[in-house]
Image (spheres, rainbow, N blue to C red):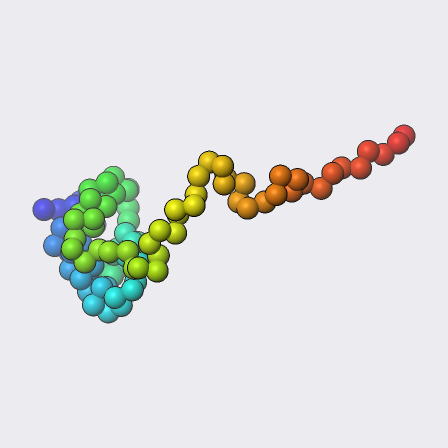
Length: 97
């Protein structure tokens, strides 16, 4: 089935690119951009991206390397301050006129 009509990329093309990248480097992080690059193409309109991602996720060789798993476990709304203390701003001096 054709996944991207703009660049004529099929499900088989995506699976083959993922397999090739996984064989070349077992620890690589595979992204849509890397798949396009491996196929010698570039994204055009982006309308295919939901189907493109679904096709990627369906591949048996698409896995997240062990060292990258659970990197976001501590992220929550309470930690949204990027690790800064409560008083991360420098107080402004009020000048007397």
